[in-house]
Image (tube, rainbow, N blue to C red):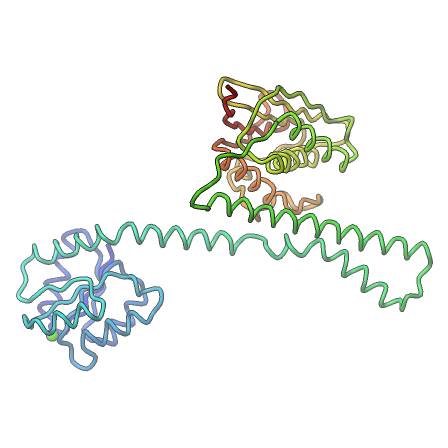
Length: 361
Ligand code: CA
């Protein structure tokens, strides 16, 4: 652990530092309150602070440290020469986690630190996890993802304005096509985002309904046909599904299949087949979407998040990462799993949803 010691008496400071370093901790030390507060900004794992400091005393230090948002959760232990109950009460009232009365033994210090660490660990892990999540979201391509379809709309309108409406019928038609295309992509993306957040809400709801039921044959056919039609690839897509009953709303499964078939079509060229199968395997229903397109790298597969995008150059792939997050969450709601794997022979991918069958009695 990284421990900050704030202690004005050089002997005690040195003794503490040696004791902690011998026990495997790294130490930063301050001789005054203000120095201690500024070192606290380095976010040590724990602060050991003397109460009786000249100038800014220990109570002033803890008050200042707690006003730094990133430091407010750092465990704070007071060292006090005053055995008086009053000082101890004040220390705890100010939010100290513990206090050690001087003179202290080696054991006192190590025990107090160990107790803090035990209690702090779950909270710390949670905070770190939250920070990592926020970082992922922030680094994702929100702006690109959300704004690209609008470029067509705004660009088209701008051209129209520049020309003062004086464009030939042919040019007008071209501009309107550009604007409509952008608006339609934006609408699609917005609907996808709304669906994504709906799934997140279902996942995070305290009482997730378990009464969802759907017919995979209908949903898989609907999702695959709809998407193949949109991509003008109906001849390339074949669907073979066995009957079953799955614990999902119709809409969720249909949308997940749309995403997967859409990806398979985007990653393959016209004429390359996309095969969609639904099979019962014991208590599991496996929906597999198999293509022979350019596939994804292992690294891309590992970074499936709502706003991740792959191989942006050249191809239009807005919402791809979002689509896979939707599929993954759909599997999660059903209590199943989603995997992407390479074709065993040759190029292409197999996307599989393995979902638990609802027993039909
Ligand atoms: Ca002192």
